[in-house]
Each structure stands twice: as structure tokens, then as C-alpha cells.
Length: 248
Image (cartoon, rainbow, N blue to C red; front, side, top):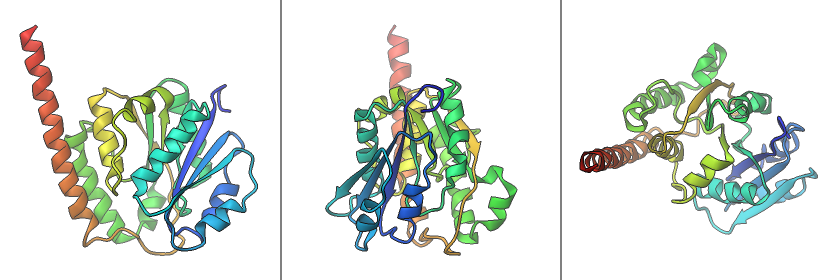
């Protein structure tokens, strides 16, 4: 519990056997429910996670890989079923520090924001430690995301360390969640259309393997194409809203 609110953490994982046990066992005591989702891993991620003894841990399994967004959606729905008021996402690869969870919970728990997201660029030490390829990709996609999402003051759009309120998550889940890598961009765009209050929170990142998993030959182009589609969607919604207002 945090400020009398029930806390859930979604942990999507794919081939994360090297870190998953530490991630699950290292959750802060304020976490009531941990919804671990094994997204069709080909290694022993499921076995290592299932062996963790932690109160509130729920292990879910996708028979085949469906994408990080699909894993998040499964975990989100489980947390709602478990009565969670504040729902976080913490990746299973060990690159998000549990020490930052409370800072992400604060703006949502206090009613200041509907959605809090990590921003690694607010910490100078993280910028210097971030692999060059990931730094370039994140900066580029963050700049492209601003006009698409409508959140001009929000940065580090690709950071998936987030907390959302129960109400806002319910609104998002009415249409489901985008399954691919660009799920953070899709969520921000939809939050913008819903008029959600979004807060950036400084977080650190851990790059224990010394390299980025971001495929610079594929991911920037894939997410850029998604951002273009999201921009068209947002412009279409804006035009529709204006037409409705004129009719009134």
C-alpha cells in the first residue's frame, strides 16, 4: 500500500532469465501485487520467475511471443482484477531501479497526475552511462513524439518505467494496447486525446550488459512509421472535435 492505495507492478519479460529473479524478489514492500508476464520466452525465464517466493506475485504466461504491449495488457488487467489503484510497469531485464518506484507513485497517488513516466535524461549520470546508440535513438524518437502526443514538455518517450491511475488505465483498456515496441508512444498519444495529466519523473537506468537492445536498423524506422500513423489519428480526432463544436 502507498498512501492508502493498493499498488500493482506489471513485469513483462522475454528471455530475461539473467535478471528476472532479482527483479521480482527486489520489489519494494509497498508493492501489493506483482503481475509477472512471460511473453513466450525461449530460455528459462518462466522457471526462474516461478521459483521466486514473494507474497502477491502472480505468474502469467503467453504460449508464444506476442509483444511487450500484449504482455503489459495482460499484466494490467490482472492488476485491475486484484483491485490495484496505482499500476506501474517495470521491465524484467533489470534496467529499471526499484528505488525509483516511490518517486513515480507520488504524483499519481497525490492526484497531481494521471500518468507518471520515467525520464532518464533528467539525470546527468544516466545520460553519460546510456549507450550511444540508445541515446541517439531515444532523443530522436522523443523529439518526433512531441507534436504527435501533444505533450511538448514530456521527454524520453521510450522509457517504459511508468505509473498509471486505475481510472485512466480503465479508459485506455477500452481499446486495448498496441502490442509492438512503440507502445509508450501509442499510450502517450491516447493519453493526450483523453486529456490526461502526464508527469516526467527523474529515474536512473541500469545497463549491466554494456550494450543497447535497441536495433538501430529496425526500431527507429518502425516507431517513426507508428508515430506518423498516430499523428494522422490525432489530427483526424482534432478535426472531428472542431466539426462537432461548430455544429453546436
